[in-house]
Image (cartoon, rainbow, N blue to C red; front, side, top):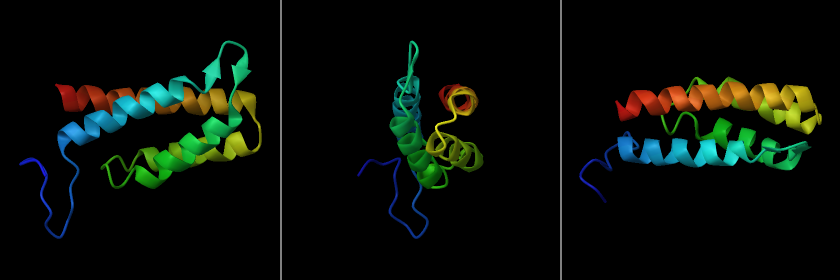
Length: 101
């Protein structure tokens, strides 16, 4: 365990852990759309994972956006998934900028 992480009653993810999480999710979301191909299963999985992890990593605002991505991917809504991915990427990058400044 690193000094920046504590195991008290309220577990908090370190800033380094948050940054790693954001980089990983940005990379994975970037793979949802490749050229003309859209990976609805990956989009659904990413929406579900981000929705589930948002509070743990202290990014509660991502929950609604991620749920929307999951729903749109489940419906094979290509335009909706593309929009949701773009919105999430902006939000993830905004969090990243704040943490890295």
